[in-house]
Image (cartoon, rainbow, N blue to C red; front, top):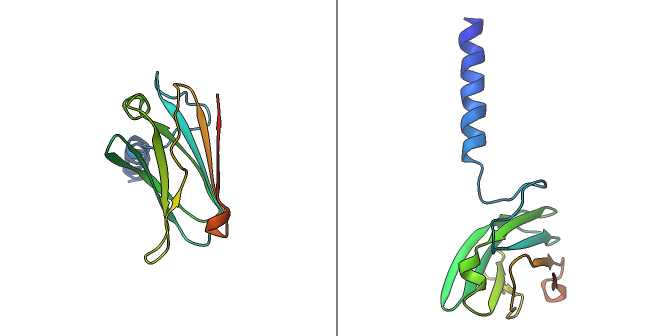
Length: 126
């Protein structure tokens, strides 16, 4: 019985690890030709984060209040011209936009969602 319990625990732990995707860990290096987006959410609600480029829009994920998240922006998004990052808070709130950014592979974008949405900032580092 004890052995079966441990096998079940290991199977659940392995499945949850295998399903964890979308966020790059602290030691992970982004894919070749991609850029990195760091989002810090200081707003009181979760925000959905999107990237748009050349008419295409992709959802990167949700960032909860008080949480910092890292996302990999695919090379196909950054090589097709300027990109814009959009953070969408709850219903009825105005989305926060980074403005159009021209990115190169390896760039790191810091998207800071402020407690007052109009004070949010975006910076790009090589």
